[in-house]
Length: 174
Image (cartoon, rainbow, N blue to C red; front, side, top):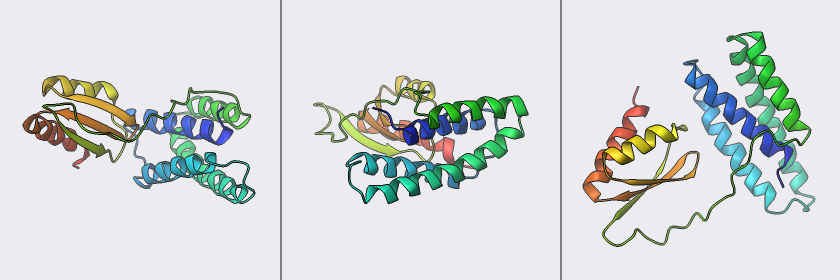
């Protein structure tokens, strides 16, 4: 079952991604706030029946509202219709409607790399296009798995992993 706050988070992630694709300036703090909210949602989901969790849910909603306000202000700079489309998605999410499919969490523990391979786990500063990551993987003979939007596991030969990491890292240098 998807919670309304989880759907709201997914809609805001979609908006954030779209704004960045359009080349609009988004405060860097939004990425960290989005990660914090996602972690808080996951914490809340561990025991939604606990009365103490009501405080956590209130805090999650407050954080989502702050992020939403910032992103919708930026969306307004595109145009009112664009902003309106996202407001409509946010309304649907707040009513508990499934606007986006929430990916099932996969096991986060990696026992080890397959024989003959090395392993690196990377927390991305901000989400990158899965297509671009796969291009890098193919170019350097790597296997890259997305564990979360901002967490990837990279398998391959040690030197190829280093080359791939340099290329992925170049997206974050300004």
